[in-house]
Image 1 (cartoon, rainbow, N blue to C red):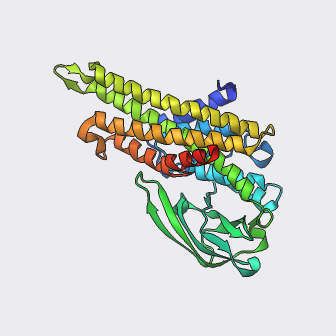
Image 2 (cartoon, one colour):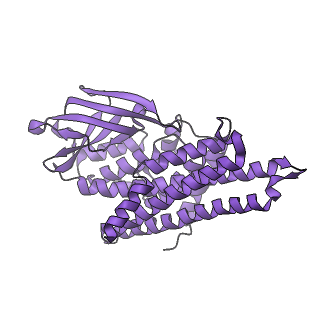
Image 3 (cartoon, helix red, strand yellow):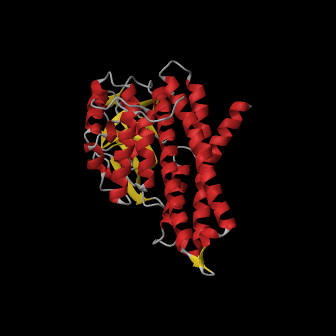
Length: 350
């Protein structure tokens, strides 16, 4: 697959990179601008208010946001939630939610295994932990077990019976835990047929994992750039320590690790593109697992090397290297850490 960017993709890459360079570290106040620039609908069909792109477009955006150490939930909302809703876009509630998402509404996915549909299919009960972006949600896209399968529901953030505990992850990303105490749901809040959305959710998760790998690539790039600048500026024995061969080799090892992660991401994006051509989901799942495993391993290596080459200052709040390492740890953990992906791949081989 040719991964050279076409004209539209090149313009998208340039616009996101320019925005990140101008803004510095993206905090949690940039969401409206993401919507205005069309990034939230980059992978959605034009008929639904998007721009007709796909996994490559979301990877382009996610990588550059990673360079900015963005704390906004771009991957959970614009990839995971958007792709899950897209699979059910023939239903009016899903189409309306997609339109709101493209316009800037925070439709945050809460898709873990802790929530179930109650008797009569009119209430939800249980607990969902680690909902990334949850504190700023306007609506939640909730996955709940029902009849041996999974159903999706759209709930307002202030729905009766729904309570939350907000907190931040180690890199500053906002998240929360949700408690469902007999939360009432109406027929219009159901997305798709009862217990019939598990496959679509699995495919949306593959897109989110690939975008997460792209975001990690951007963070790795920021860590390598910061380390290179430090080695050029720091002086010992009258010369920049960047002239020391051992340190130059370690910087080269960091760049090699990043390119290993990039290569496996390209494989994952090619497999996701093949899904639209009729390829089976098993090959895409395997390619994405490989990319996620390599992303986690490369990210941890690069983050640790960046801190070590900075010395003691690397773990201070004033040093960007420490922030990069924290975000790489979070990105490895979310959507299935490297160790879990390797176990999955080993199970497939067995």
